[in-house]
Length: 343
Length: 255
Image (cartoon, rainbow over all chains, first blue to last red; front, side, top):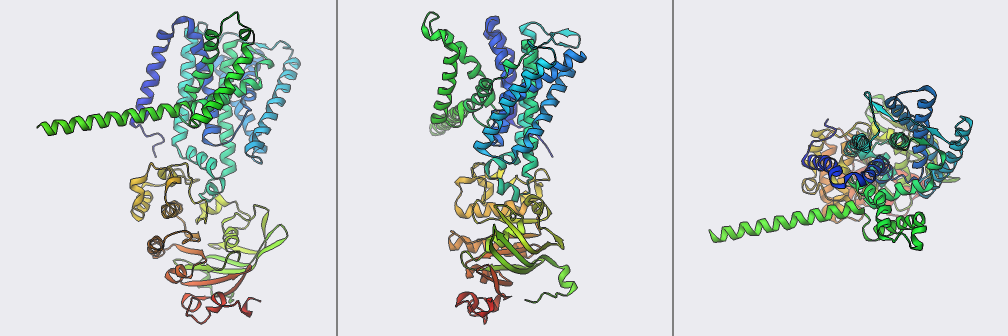
């Protein structure tokens, strides 16, 4: 069985993605490389939520909690046991996966709005546990992390970070595409559509949901470790509901379930604050409330996208692509007819 | 109803229900349901609306218990093994496929995605996919179309195709003819006849005597949650000697 058929769409997507990664530092320059890094840092979480919510239909605002689990697990191993970066990365990812599985079991009993509320509760519980934990671990200001090193190289500069995060995002994108095309992704979609029909088709619905929560929580955990190392600090104030909602925005704006969605969504959501800063005069009253303005802009963006384009911005791109293809084909056909007529 | 079946008969029974009772909370939905489906046989349960036909199917597919309903008495044996209490996906994987009356397809998924949703064993095998595409030729041209945009008849065929990809030994169909044009029903009947010519056993639940007449080897008549009669199709259907059980006034056989 071929898990991923290497077809044209996949190849084109991969080439565009790699070319964009290679060209991005050249185009944005060193000033905006930091923004590009934030975008890359947001993509894994977008991918995870895209699978959980877009593919499997399980709504969740618990992602900041899993981000924290990844961060705290990695920080604990790094600070207490001096594990190298790669080991901490793996352990943080696994820890988030395990917590995801544990959370999924009670979550099986609820769906839709109630699941959303349950994950909201998870966010508040996690927030509390993180702050208690960091006090108990004698790190009241949070865990400070050293610069990560890979194969003897310290990752310090923005340029190095860019490539480390680019690789992580690429690996997760590949994982997402593979899952979407496999029978596992197919069964998650089936569950999203109709759980009873999925069960009648032989799909073990509860097990599939637990697997989905586990895999996607691990992905968010991986991002949590990267985020922690990039910031250099794991602090309970970082893992807020606002952050969780930013990821929901990434998925909704990018386009639920679509492959390009997390990329497009991450660019919009991470780029928005910079655009707002450019547009709003620094001396205006609005500029003093830039954080609130950002929240309002996210909210507005979600509403606009849901009204105008429920498939998200990736859906707009897909449609434009199809239209461009149709126009090109029509032009080529009419040219062919003209030539035939002349001959 | 004769229950003491001969051992040879027993061995070839794909499905056997014995004295099954299902309750929704405290209300009895069906009671004393006993039936048998043999390999390659087409059995039809006939009955009016609300007779308990769908509940009977649910007791087989594992969707009872669920929705506050449970099997409170009797046994359901598929190939000699009890299925009561098993989750629906496990029953499906054992070889019981079902085409429900409503919600037959995953509307937002493409036709091809619908076909490749088969749990537990990865993607369906290519020769199985080829087989259902031959059986339902419309699929080939509609692979990428969303299943929600198919016509009623096409949805029914897609649901049948997906059910067959489970490689079932027993196929349950709830209201094959519901909402479909007679010409489409005829085509489906032809296809089902072809399928049952193999080893596949079919259990259909129907309001329509036409479908039963066209397909059934054996007919059970269900009314108000109880089996009122059963017998070979030619006796049970209009013109047959026991037909009044369903088509006339329900007689004393039901009590």
